[in-house]
Length: 261
Image (cartoon, rainbow, N blue to C red; front, side):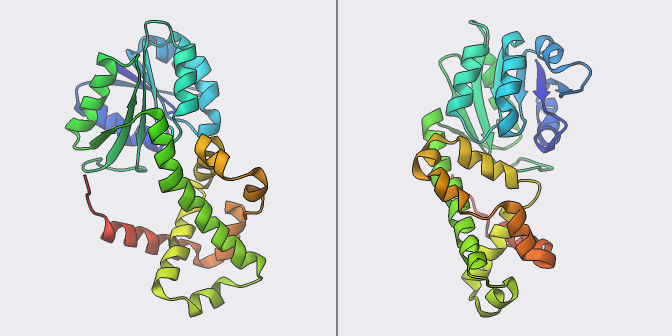
């Protein structure tokens, strides 16, 4: 099968191109200025996977879904984009959705990916799932609504909680140095996790997940979100300690990682 990864020059493309090739598939990488173009690559492929920033996903769906035999996405929000893919894809095209719960990896062994099938999912989507399973990933099957509700409570609530906490410190005029100096280990871990969360590579992703997830939009008003400090402001607050805090968070996550499935 020929798989086109639209936006495949990014971390998800780099991670999954070898996964699909190891399962015997040919992989095309396409992007905004690629040759072949997004539309041509989609028309050449048996299946297209869209992996672009959430804010750009609708535009790419509108471009590639109409010429795709099968289309999936890697976004962290499911309900709106699955609806769009089903709307724009041809009547007989397959449609499914994936959410890898990890960033760029050399191996996805023991990592988890959520699969949201639809009434239009079929053998092509199953072949993609087979590639994940062959690579040793854990595949969780959820509906789009189940996925978005879970992401609200497991990711977006965490994002909002940590940003609200650090925003309170900043509004109070406290410095990072004096907060660290009196913080017990659990609080230091929270600060380090927030430094990781606002990393310039993924800060916008968490912002967009809050903005596009229906459950989060219902929970947090625009006024509440407006009171939060931006990722850029929080990075400035951490200053020279930012990278060290991110490394401590990465080490903590690596050391504490366990399998529950």
